[in-house]
Length: 270
Image (tube, rainbow, N blue to C red; front, side, top):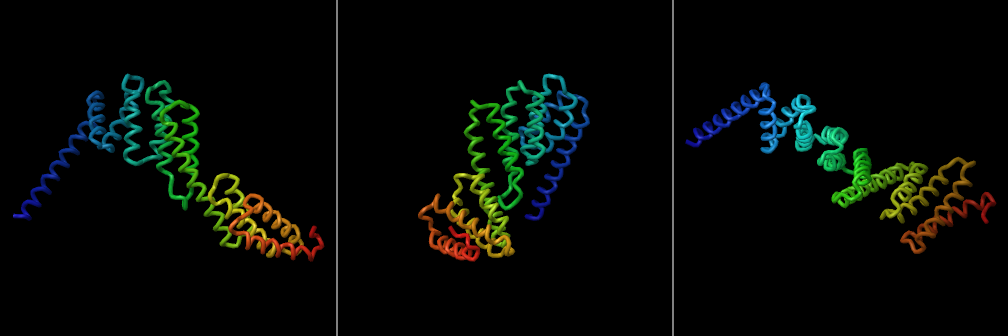
């Protein structure tokens, strides 16, 4: 009995699926654009976004210049969005705003354009081009609609994305440091502090810049060591100026003393 019921429900599901596909194909082949538009909207409202997308793809061409052109294109944008194709959705939301600049939906379209880039932003360990694009698009939205109710939301997303970029920059600097690429590490640590002035990594960046500078000098050819030990002292002074009671003070002082000791060989200690 249980097996019979399973077969029955499977057959019913198959019949419904075939019927649904048959109905959709009839709609696609129909020349009645009003009926096709109504069907596309219904598919969209029933969350059958792939079906809606296929119908609106034809409708946005056929209905161009009519009173349904705007709504067809906006449904088309939203259909891409809800299928998770954020790259295509971002493109079409932006294009919608350019095509219908006076539309009541233009503001939302530009917001969703930026939001798509935000949703496409990967973890900080991966390439962050989508994060950079999202920040730029959110800022363009704010510039265009400074009084929009969405501005606070945009700023929240920008802060979140910048935090991700900050972690990415820190991780890159640490990677250089661990690989003993000390020259690149110094630049990378300094860029973290420069690009993210309020970074929580500031103190550690300054200390590791100091440490990298010393190790870089230590591993340099003889003719370069003097200037690089001097640079080590500059890095120490910068750390102590900003964090006079740094938690790394003991080790920083040891590095400073070692650099000064090395400079005695060059008779340049002031």
